[in-house]
Length: 158
Image (tube, rainbow, N blue to C red; front, top):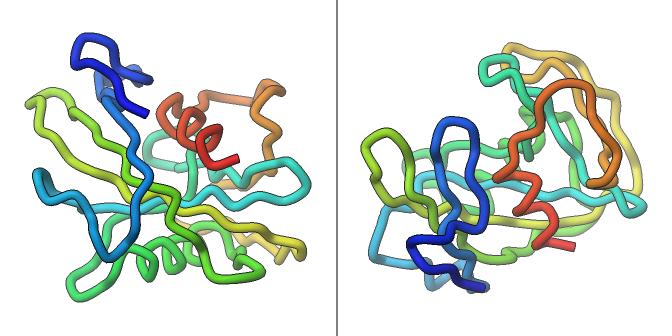
């Protein structure tokens, strides 16, 4: 799936734009821009896990920065556990790479997007970063703001 530079696939309220999404394999990430982060769409019964980020004050997919020496799938699994306390039933699978143009400096970056399934919900404890979790069907209105870029990415992982 691709988009022209004039028509982003999705834009958030800060002006960050999802420009394209390419299916891919983890051993061959795009090389034309940095790949600093990974997110996870964890599904359970037709609902995706969303976390409420205390800093950005919105619902988003669990994920975050890829640390030095870490592979994208390792970062995705670590961030999922840290932010939500949840674990997938099987290893996460790479869905693809989302290409963003980030505001305000218009720099380009990629985000590795992973997906998985969860049959057992584990206890959640609010933490420094995450205030709450919810299993969202992508249709019902959630209390508060939903990160539109993450909602779009979640839909791509169905």
